[in-house]
Length: 365
Image: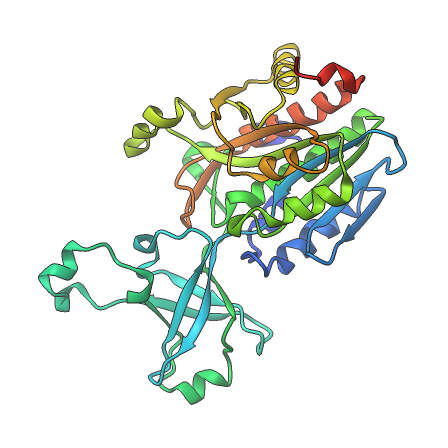
C-alpha cells in the first residue's frame, strides 16, 4: 500500500483549502471550502459575526470541547495608488520584506470577480546605491505593479484596502513521495484543517462530548478570533492546533538553541508550560504511547503566542492544550510540513478527547 493511502486525512480537502486566499480579515474564500467540507459530517455548521466558523458534533452534550485552528494567513493591503499606477502596500501580519522582493502576487480586488495578477517591484541591483545594497529592504521600499501606467487606469480595478497574497499554491515535494507538502499560508490553515479532520475522526470513534471544531480568524493580528469564539462556546476543554518551528535543516538548526529539537516527520509536537494544563499534557503523552503515535515535546515557558493563549483565559479558564505541526520556513510562501505529522496530530487529538471523562481529574494540583 502506498504511503498516502495510509493517511486518514483528505489531501483533496487540504489542497482546496491551501489554494484559497485568506489574509486576516478577508478569510472568506478559505472559510467557504472549510464550511462545505464540514457540512458533510458535522451535526451543525455556522459562522459568527466575527467570521469564526464552527462545526459541531453532539451539540447538546454537557461537556464542551473546543478544537481551534486559525484559518487566516499573513498578507498585504493596498494603502495607496500612486500617480504612475503602482500600488503601495502595508503588511497584514508579520512579513519578512526580504521574502517579498520579486514575488508574483494576487490583488483580491473588490471591483473584479477574479484576482488581479501583479508583481512586487524594487529597484534593480544595478542602480542601487552601495549603502542600499548593504541594508535590509523595507516594505516601504517596495510596490506592486499590475501592468498599468496611471492612477486613473488602476482605480478602475483596485481600491484602497484591497488585500493581497503571494501567488503561490499547494504542491508536493516529489522526492518525499508526496509526504512533504509546500504552500503559502500553511500557518495556520493546516491547523484549521487538522481540527476539522480531528472532528471527523472523533465522530467515527463515537466521542460522547459536544465537540466544536473552529476555524478561527485574525490570529495573525492579535489572536482575535479565538477570544470571541471561545467566549461563545465557553468550553470545558480547549485544544489549539498551530505550527511550530522545525529546527532540523540548514540554518534552522540554530533554532535548537532557543526551542530545542523539532523535526519534520517525527510526529506532532505537544507543548508543555504554564499556558497548558499539565494533566491534559500527560493525557496526550499517555494516549500517544498507548496508540503508538509518535510525538515530540516543546517547552513553552511563557505564553505560546497561539490561540491557546486566548482559550486558557476565557471566562473561568478551560482545560487548555496545544498541539503543533513542525513547519519549515514559517511566514514565507514556501512553508513545508510533513503530512504524516498532520495525520498523527489528527489521531492524537481525536483519541485523546475520547478518553476525557471526569473533568475534576484535570485540576492541576
